[in-house]
Length: 277
Image (tube, rainbow, N blue to C red; front, side, top):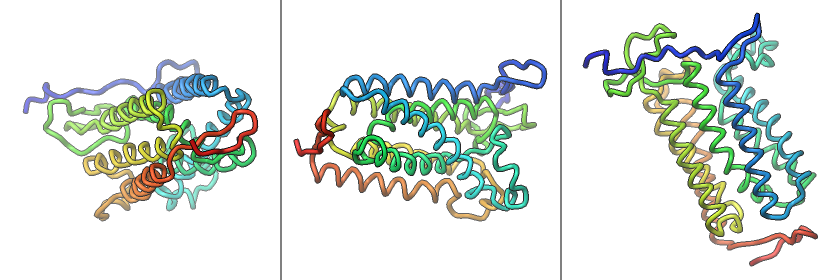
């Protein structure tokens, strides 16, 4: 196929720079995602007549948990051989290296703590609300990966293949960043519909269960056409991203089943008492 049929990707990861300080697309999209997520959360809390002070503390928990969890996930799941010899580089997040599975685990642990200390409600209650904007944030982060010319796929003859010229590539590769971003945007649309147009939020664990299945099942299958992130993955039948996705998919199926089995519940706004609907 004529090379002109492919997309020659030469976009700079930097928007602009002033001296030694640069503003990158990845960081901007990351920040935009969190700001959009906060605005969505504010709408939800106002709609449910909840204390907005909860949202303020929740936002801080989520930012810290996402960054710390994603960084440690990359360190331990993908780069321990290197970081065990260079431990001071673990904190150098600005040099890149974040893992979505680690971010998901960090968020889950932070929300368990937040639920016990702040809301006094089930962690599934807050997860059902947090995952709605999270799907959008994930799509924006994958778009940031595209702007960085990273985490792309294996060679392809498809006309929408990307030649990542900044990386010295000479053949077209699957733009798996776009595939994942589209999958997450579809998930975001489904989550928005479930929260605003149905009674799904009353079935604790239903929305987050659907989120886990859609996000991590799509991640599992896209990994088949993605280049290995680390050398140790070359001999694996399933790569690290796929092995880490399986528990989330199974957990999502379990949450969907249990939420439908238990039926809807609600909380009294004033007392926080949980009751069956």
